Amino acid sequence: MNKIEAKGNWNEQKGKLKQKFAILTDNDLMFVEGKKEEMIGKLQITLGKTKEELYKIIGSF
Image (cartoon, rainbow, N blue to C red; front, side, top):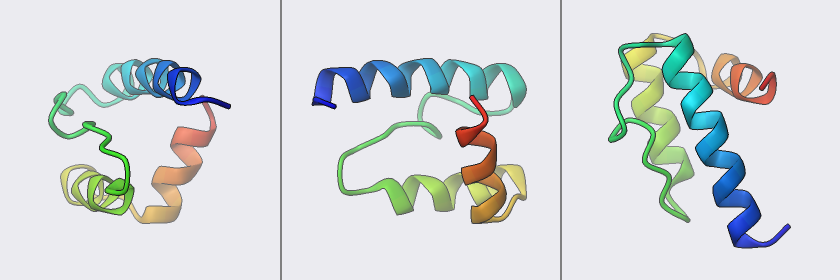
């Protein structure tokens, strides 16, 4: 998978997350290469979910 496909896929998943959790903002879901764990940590705080729960939710899209 090249970077364009990954970015397109993330944009789709980001939209689905925002539909499921209206509290999320674009800043919460900003994916910067190399900072995935930082983004997941922010989501954990915002949504009150564990890392495993978040990966399961994201993977279900």
